Length: 399
Image 1 (tube, rainbow, N blue to C red):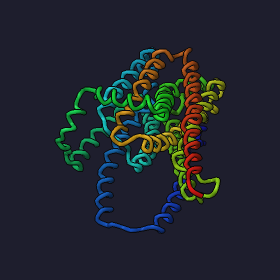
Image 2 (spheres, one colour):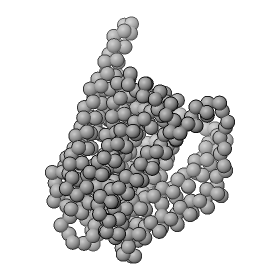
Image 3 (tube, rainbow, N blue to C red):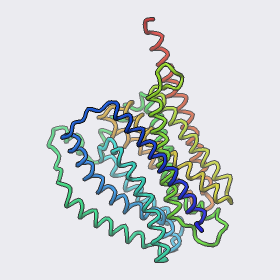
Image 4 (spheres, rainbow, N blue to C red):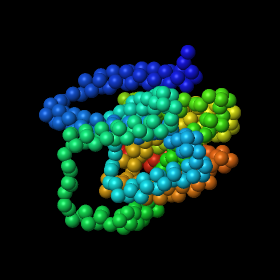
């Protein structure tokens, strides 16, 4: 008989599959209405996307194999103190933070998000089986190394080297950490309340998300009344499916809004709609963390609260992508994102180094409070500001 977490995973996968099927059928009908194919362009685009997604799936699979058991490997198998485990998490996080300003990536392909969800779910189940068979938390990491080696082979076989172009503007972006561009970005942000709120949301939400990566295993372990170890791989897969459901929910809501008659109350301007969704995502995330704090001995309630947070993660990225893409110009988008990571890094590092053992609930409480503040600020500043601007513009139009 399947365990509780296996049953929840099956339910989530079935719901996600049905939702994907319906969404795919509706999308095909919409494309059939307006179809002007360019076969040569479509073939080239499909080939390029296929070459990218194959490597992306392999590399992300290697990363997701490790996800469920990083904490357990350090804490239980190697018996490291929890503070040292937090330091190791901080080391990896800071490494990513240092390299972020050097990247000028604008967005990830929409297909990659969906592929990532499938890969993560499969990796969670596979890593769980590996640990059960080998009785070692290190086995998923060995399998991850094998996948990375496969990724190298595929890259060598499918990808050609991209040397870029030599441009005079490259000199401005070659300085270490792009301090000049970060300074320019700050001058832009401090005069625009919308961008300040977007930065606050990034700090609060993504900071809470990185803390969640460290806290979900010990939080479920302390709430569990069973002596047998938790099936962390299955739980991780449940989180990934919940994240996909959140992404699908965003797609459904935005599609419904776009198809609505502009004269009806259901219609919302895309920017206003995404600002409201951003406020809602932060509010639900704050509520989810509040539930986990109040239900210390309710393992299943904590699990579903964490699933709700992961669904919010699935909605957060397309919502924020829409807000940033609309409110931030292309030339400043990557640099502003890097600028917003500065307070984010500080928040996560300080929380991880202090939020262990007895302070774990305090970290979750702080995250819930900051997410609540972010939700309120988004509603007050961006949503109200856009509504007032829309009313002003409507009043100025001739009858």
